[in-house]
Length: 307
Image (cartoon, rainbow, N blue to C red; front, top):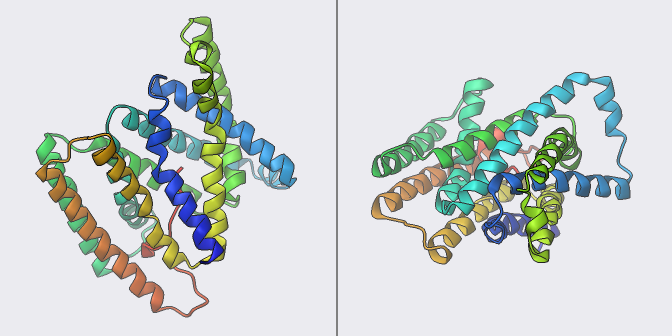
């Protein structure tokens, strides 16, 4: 098996098993888990950058201060996505979270059309319409829009759009984003300590280690994804991305026994049909290009890391 496939497959499986990690921390308030993820991610990323001696990118930030503002915005989107996901998992909404990552590629295309004025092909419009019908069915069933799914898809879609033209790599970009978030996280955790509400202080040793592990748990799959993307076709990478929400859906339904009523099954079914049309169109577009040309984000076959 191609080493790139192994790297990418491992990354997507790790992301797909994230509910297991966050469920192990469900006794810790979601906002505190988020703060620890912000803080320990920066420390782990900084350690990796020090080992790899990759600091030249900091000169680019000094030369282009506007870049820092862009990464500050992407940090807000990323932390919002993280926070919603953590809360969803620990509030028994793993199935809803999985839907967010199923529809994320479709949201990427929709955002590209609206904000970047990218033209959609006919089948892409069909895919969006079918998926929207699926979301509507689920909204009617529960009596409100599936805000968890849509929020996850929109925050990550907006994040991917913002990072699409960013001149920094995945690891360097994450370093800047977590550096922006770090002071807020530390200030919040310090305030909790003064109020006697810091879960880390009262937690057992295993829970403390799990919170510290938020750094490598966040960073390692990102590095595996980047390594895989460099060694395999983007078309195959785009197909593999659906491993993540599929694993999350399986965990939500079979391990955590979350409700999956008929209306939700119909809604998911429509979303899957929409994704099949979307993927077919993306593959057809990719195969129609010369071999040296990689597909673009709006083709529906370029995967983005699920942070």
